[in-house]
Image (cartoon, rainbow, N blue to C red):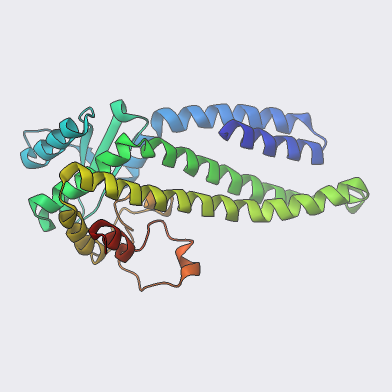
Length: 274
């Protein structure tokens, strides 16, 4: 689908500008970006977060929790990274369960008790087991490309002479403008909707893994009231266990469309079946 969307954009632009080179560039671009995002996305994310690897020797309790829960879930033990940040949070990344990473902040280990920490780790391992780590990466790349293509098209139409936009091309211009304005909005909403749905699924899977949903609900309460993660970025916000930009006021339904995570109240209600 990624190839189809990228090549579709390339075909439209090449048709409008009457240049086959644009389509060729779109195909080459899609191949290169797909390769880079699949093989190196985890390294990019970890570098952005300032994470460093740990071993059993320098973080025995965390390593044991991840190892035990991985065995219970039937997953390979992922690499474990630590982020020096006082705000409690965590995320998982990687291209598949065999090449997965779980990263936690120092604040998560300091502010959560063992059962709450197990709940968060089980949630992240569920993301790995459900292949959310790859899905979220592909969606990010796709949304980024759609936004970039839209911006380039909207800028370039002003460079063309008015007589180039008459007749049939005038209709194509109108269609293109509508699509290029709405496409990034629609793509972003799809990205956020997917992210929110996968969070609910990971909560449910994590609770089944530990058999103790109350601990995960308690961890959510603590993390939702914590300050922002210093290394958080808009492009990776959806990867975190909860919104890394700190607590927010309750929002009306329209604003919820643009949230990277479901409201904490809804997640806790689902976990506790209330």
